Image (cartoon, rainbow, N blue to C red; front, top):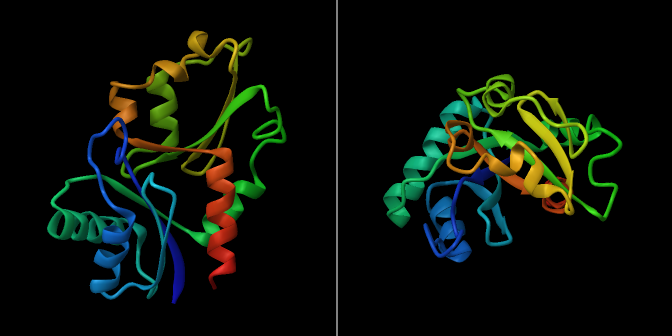
Amino acid sequence: MAKYIALLRGINVGGKNSISMKDLKAAFEENGFANVTTYINSGNVLFDWDQTDEASLSECCEKIIEKSLGLSVRVTIITAEKLKAALSHAPSWWGADPEEKHNAIFVIPPATAEEVIAEVGEINPKYEKLDLYENVIFWSASFKYFSRTKWSKIVGTKAYQNVTIRNANTTRKLSELAFSNK
């Protein structure tokens, strides 16, 4: 068994696509997933499952959510090990400055981080920083100049449809939970 994290895209945001974490957990458990836990209301599900490819597992989770909860949402899957590796490769500036917003942008396959970055366009290094490790994009920007950043304007774009975003604290906590639940 391996530890996986399902990251649901666009749920419980602005009153749309509401999902109870209790119901989400139950749906995963009813479909044979082991050691299921959820973390905060933004759609993070940790679970154990027999080794499988992440694309098939993502599709499986999407079908479970649609069948059990009546919502069609995109899901990306990352193993606990891959999340730990990504965090160990995060740039030193990511998550460091309390005057900045720090996001981990998880790209939903088949899109790639390179495609998403190309679509958003070049950052303005005066206002934002960007780095990536595999399909995780690390982004930081000053709260003061947030509206001047490229990545603040991602909402509504094709690139936005291919990502799910978690802040640095949530991302780190997911990794911590994944290893504390083993």
